[in-house]
Image (cartoon, rainbow, N blue to C red; front, side, top):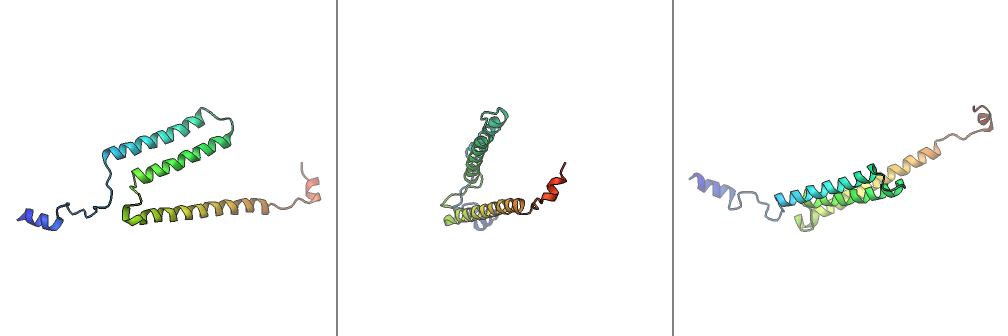
Length: 131
């Protein structure tokens, strides 16, 4: 009787009801973990070993590694792809990225203009009194 109730209540798929949702496997999680460690270790080595003398090049490479690592996390840990929920999870991710880019670029723009526009102009009297 209890097994019948269990089968009726939970069904053949053990009641998960997420047939179209990808589930993580140990192999997938280990692949994501190893890629994440590699994508963290390489930029760390670039900075610690001072591989590039130009800091702008190092920063650009670190940003590229960070973007790739975000993709690894989305695929291997969040299990997002175009098939899940008819693509709505990807649409939500794109919307989030757009909002973050707007917020970051707007913040940088405001801070830059506050820095340049809020500095009081130097009058000739002020310049004479400087040490």
